[in-house]
Image (cartoon, rainbow, N blue to C red; front, top):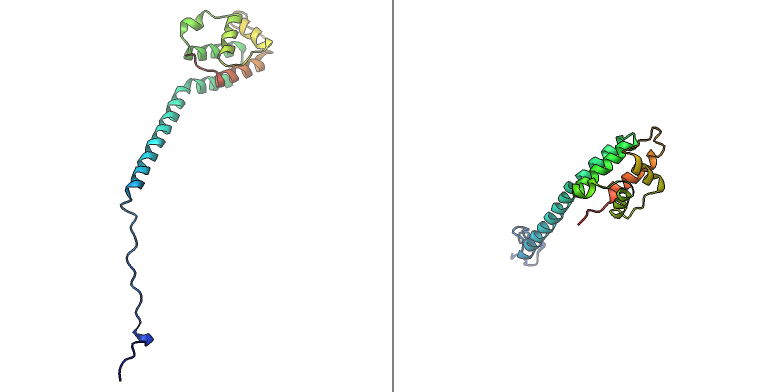
Length: 150
């Protein structure tokens, strides 16, 4: 008796080719990966540089949090200004000229209380420090948002 070629017992499983390997990738994927690495490195470098350049701001805000007198706040503002501008430009400023310089660098207009406190603090410290919260608020805002002179 002859075997029937259509008999189901003669069927074999289909042999599939091996899966396509992901490695090595196509040249387009390699180029895309290189571009992505370059862009990520550039942004990481900019972020790190910005973080390092703003270290003086972080330190000034940390010191400002522990300041408990108008004199200390005024000193912190002066030191912060010296970190971004030449000493010759900052050292001679006092009174209205000092507050004007601060407002020019931040687009932040100091209130009359702050102007008075900054104008008299170094030479005539106030024993009450009733203007300390307003002064600290101005100082924190100025430190956080001032622009560097060109």
